[in-house]
Image (cartoon, rainbow, N blue to C red; front, top):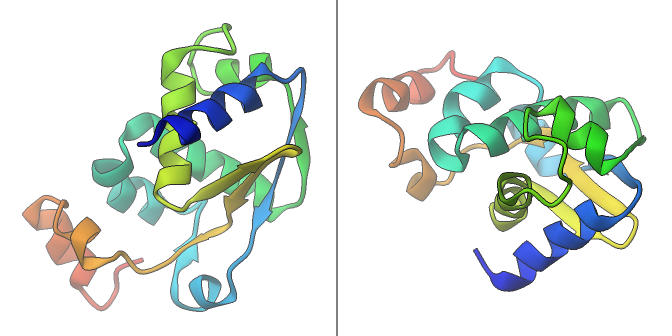
Length: 141
């Protein structure tokens, strides 16, 4: 994870308010699954880590319904990250979402994917065997 991405996440959480909005990708929406689904929790937790995955799951669901404004305090409290908007875990979790292409941070806020696409092989290889088998089954996601 680059220092630039960490700095972007720190700046976002340093604002008095930021906007969460959808990050659309037609190809991912066609072949993937909704970010707010159980599949996101099951298959991305071993890849993104628990905090980043829960944040993606929830913010992606909110973003799918439109834009919403958040304060850093609300964000931290929602995800059990304490009330300090500059906590290391909050910053690292957001930076992780950006690093994995699940979100983009800009001056207005953060755009979050509303769908998760098929996992790249490199990511799928990180899944425990039982999850990889389930992921590769025809009924997955």
